Amino acid sequence: LLFAAFAISAGLGGIGAGYGVVAATYAASEVGLKGTLGALAVVCGNLTMTLVGVVSALFSTVSFTRGRQLRRFGRVLLPRVEAGDAWAAPSDEVGLADDLDEDTRHALAQTWRDNARTEHASVAAFARLTLDLIALGAPPALVASANRDALDEIRHAEMCFALARSIDGRAEGPAPFPEAARARTLSRVRSFALAELAVDSLIDGALHEGVSARIIAKLARRAVDPDLRAMLKIIAADEGRHARHGWDVVRFCLDEGGESVARALQGAIRALPRTMASELPEPARMGGWERFGIMSGALESREYEAARADLVTRVTDLLAPYEIATRRAA
Ligand SMILES: [Fe+2]
Ligand SMILES: [Fe+2]
Image (spheres, rainbow, N blue to C red):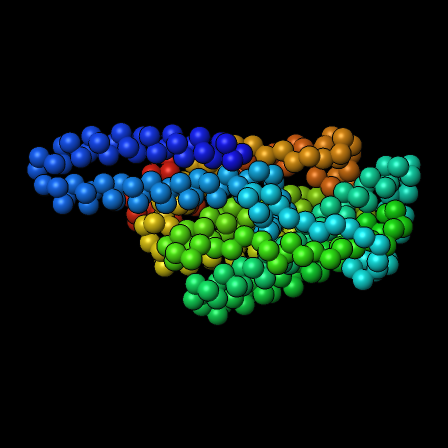
């Protein structure tokens, strides 16, 4: 991935340099050296911000995640799982997967535990978001949303660990997670920080939380067990709200940062993968676990494509006042 990022950087840099030289040659004759250097600075500045968007987007789309995550160089940070019932209360859920053999039931429970780990890490990601918003001078409504969303993620993590326990009988929860305190921080340069936060919120917030909401809403309709349906409905509604909050953060960054943030968003849109395919256990991938609330490969790719198309349209509208084209990504 790093190699890809460097290759794209080098490519964009090369194109930029080419344009720069051509522009400089024309401009030097008409506006003199000062004007030429100014024009070159604008070209380089624009390219740099586009690159911030491209690289941030590449790092954030290495794998599909259920929502906001903590990352280090693109790698999603998740807690290990250990025995303990603090996060995995006994649930009312009984006999959900009793028709499965023991190994399959354990694999299904593990998949729910993996979901729980991402929900738990999301709590920390929203805490990180709160710090970032405070650092950038965000209004109280945005800070409040980030804190409420963190509380939602605590509830999601508890529900997922409890569900896993009800499936295979193992009381397990997140182990100490010191990496949470060492996750990526934003640049100290305000315009870069706004661009990074805008792209993070676009991808992890608007896109990933939005795709989660769509997938989980569908799964809520396909689940047979009434308690599981109710749980999935709650999570889908929460993730949909988190996605809307992601857009709120994008708009805040755009209002504050102006064109440089717009360039970064344009770069992010261009770097978005066309498809998304998570690693799933074979029976899940084929759709056999949808009745247990686990997505199939087909459901994931369909909802991702729909959410991606919607995202490109909305970003194009957002960037319209800046006259920055994004249609090529559509
Ligand atoms: Fe969640
Ligand atoms: Fe979420």
